[in-house]
Length: 312
Image 1 (spheres, rainbow, N blue to C red):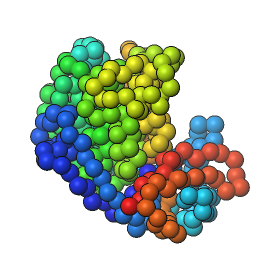
Image 2: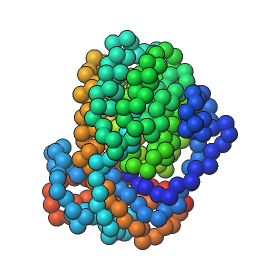
Image 3: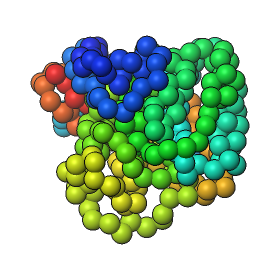
C-alpha cells in the first residue's frame, strides 16, 4: 500500500465526487487520479506458513523500488485503519445471505476501535454510500436498515468507488469487497478498475461466495480489452478478483454460498492488524509505474505487498 501526496481531478458529475458528498450515485462516470511522491509507505504482511511473524524491525526488510534497494526510514503498524466495506446486493443475494451480511458487518464493526474509521457502501443497480470514513458505532444500524437485494452487479464500478473512498481518510486503508457473481452492468472496464486500484493506497480483500472453482474462459488479457458493455464470463470475474488482490497486496477468499461471513470478515481484519507499514523516501521520483519488491533479510518467511505504485 503506497501512500503519497494526493490530488484528485474529478469530472462533473463524477461517481466519486457525488459519493464523497454522501449521495446515492449511478455507475456512469470515472475518477482520474494524479499523484506526486514525497514518501512511500508499503503495507506488508510478513508470514511463515501463513502465520504472521511478529516483532520485526525495519532492518528485517529489504525493499527495492524499480530494482534499487531503498533504506527503510520507519516501521509502523496497522493498529488504526480505515476499513472500507463494499457489498454486492444484486438480485442473486438471497434473504439468508442478506441477513448474514448484516450480521457480518455488525460483528466487524464491533472489532473496530475509536482510532479506526469505517466506510460502507452497497452496489446493485445503484452504488449506495451509507457511511464515509465514519467513527465506528454511529449510524451503523440505520445504514443496515437500508440494505435491500435486487438488480445487477456493477463489480468493476464498485472497485473504483472503494479505491476512491480510500482518499477520504489518511489511515491505512483495507477494502473488504463481497460479491456472489461476476460483473454484469459496469460502465468501468476491468482494465480501468485495476488501474485505479493501482493508483490508490488501498489493500483489497475480495470475498467471493459460491463462485466457480475452475476458470475455463479465455485468458484475462481478453477481458482487459473487452468493452465494458460486453458481458463478462465467470472466468473473467475470478481473474478480476484475484488480480485486485494481487496488485494491492491483499488476498482473494472464496467461500461457500452458506459460509459464515462473520468469521470470514473477522479473519480479514485480524490478518490486517498483523501487517507492517514500511516507509521510505524514494531515491528517484521518475514518473510512471514503480515496481516494488519486498522480502525479509536473512530469515525465513515471505512478504505480501502491493506490486507497485504510480508516480507522476
